Structures are given as structure tokens and as C-alpha cells.
Image (cartoon, rainbow, N blue to C red; front, side):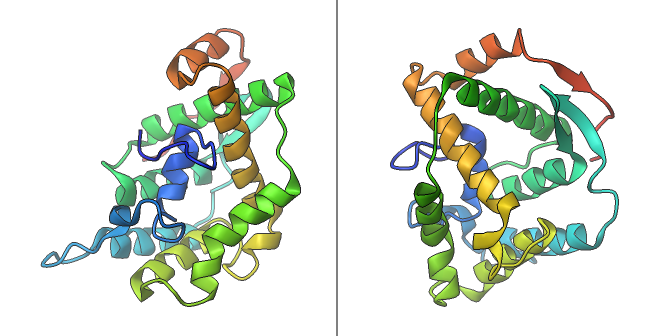
Length: 207
């Protein structure tokens, strides 16, 4: 577990993505610490990779679908790069597995009637972006987060209105609540849900 459920009720994949924002919401600042004495810190390395990703074509290439919902190469790439700052770096196959698990949980949460209000999403947006917009984070971290948003097709200033970004946050809350309401054992839930989910592998993810 990279990130506690806590107030937000995030699932594990949500934790991985929000690890990039750890210093912003005051729960996991150690995840984005510069490694002094090295040629390049994890944050610098991630910034460079996010910048590359933002300019590359082919990110919308679909690698798999879960219950008809696509998982793209861009999603895999973003998760892999984010894992560099959070823990040991994931492989593309590991990132795809996490994406599938996440999609399975989102579907189950929606089917079970779990809801998240727009006010709750607004609150999460404010908590994540507020320190950045107010200049309260180190420059290195700000540059990395700005690059993350560019790779996701938006900007820091426009992220709060980006439906793509809001959907990411909404799904994190949905799946976290679903897991917590069903005993808290994410792996057991995913294993059970995968048995009935419609999972189609379309192409191998690119490393």
C-alpha cells in the first residue's frame, strides 16, 4: 500500500497517481524528495519523461478494454512514470494490470450505487492544486506536476475544469469507497470481479 485510504478513501491505483501529488496534500511528502548527490532526482527524471510524453503521438492507442471502457497507451505510460516518484518503477505490463483492476473496481462501484458528489471532487481538486497555484511547493515539484498535466492533455491552471482530470479524481473516490464498504480487501475483490468482467486485450503495451 503506497498511500492510506484516510479521508479520501482512495484505492491503490488512486494512491499511486496521487503519490505524484503527495507534497501537495500534505500526506506523503517523502515520496517526491530530491536525491542529493545524484545526477538527476526522481522528480527531474519524471518531469523529463512527462514532457516527452506530452509531445509524442500514439498515446490514444488502445491496449485493452474492460467492460467496453478503453485503456490507452498514454494511461500506461503516465502510470509507469508516476511510479518512479512513488516507489519502485512499474513495468508496462504491471501498469496495465493495475489499470484493469482499477476499471473493474470502477464498474463494480457504479453498479453497486456508490456515488461521489461534484462538491467532493471540487474539494479534492482544491486540496491537490491549491498549494501549487499559491506557489507553496518547491520549483522542482511544480515543474513535474505541470509536466504531468501537459502529458494528460491539460494545464495546471485548467485542470480543475478538465473533465478528464475530474474523472480521475471521481473514480479514485468511487473505488476507494467501494473497497472500504466491502471489507477493505482490494485484492480479493478484484480477483472475484475479474471472473465476470469483460476484459479484452487488444495490443501489448509498449515499454
